[in-house]
Image (cartoon, rainbow, N blue to C red; front, side):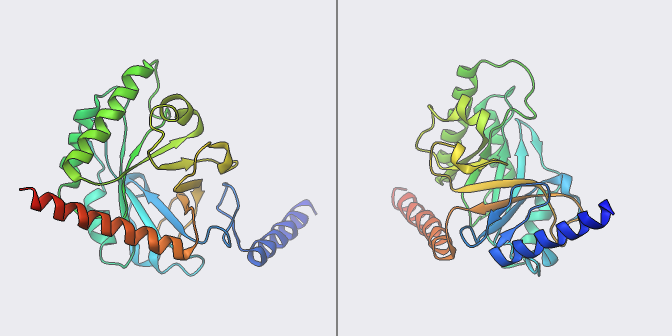
Length: 253
C-alpha cells in the first residue's frame, strides 16, 4: 500500500511539474523553467563516455550549453577533455571550459596548466575558475588562497584577453570571494535558494544528480540567469567582446 501511494504521489508531482514548467533535477532543487528556461550541464572525466548527439537532441529538455573541465591544479589535465571538446564541437551547442582550483598549488602555475591545456581553442562561453573547499581538505591561509586566485585570474586574462567567471558554493564564496572579487561574475552552486548569495549570479548549479540522455551517470544541472532573449544577447555580447579585444590586440602589434 505504501509503495502504491508513493507511486501515485510521484506521478501527481510529475504532472504538476509539467504543468507549472518545473524541471525536477533528480535529487536537486526544482526550478521554474518559465523563469529560467535555459538549461546546461557541466562534465568531467567522471562522466565517462558521452554521446553528445543524444545530449543535444534530448527530448525531455533542451540542453542549451555545456561546460567541461579542462584541468585541475598545477599539472593535471582532465583525461576526457580533448575527446569531449572534439565530439561536442560537432553539434550546435555553446561550449565553455573550467579549471578546478587546488589550494595547495600556486595561482600562476595553475593558470599555466589551464592555458597549456586549452591552447588556442575557441569557446562560446566565458572561461571559469572553479573554487570550492570540497577537494581541498586541510587548513589553509586565506590570504594565500586569495592571492593565488588573483594571480590565476590575472595570468589567464593576460594571455587569453577574455572574461573569467568564478564558480563557488556559499561557504567558499563567503570566505574567499565576496569581499575580494566583488566585480567578478559568479556561477553559484546552491541546493536551497540562489538568493542566499548577495550578488547577481550568471549561472546557477542546482543539482549534482540530474539525468540526461547520452550520459550514463548522474550529471550536474545548471541554469542561466535570464530568459531566451537575454541568453542570446549574452552569447552575442561575449562573441563581440572577444572580437573587439582581438582587433585591439592586433592593432597594438
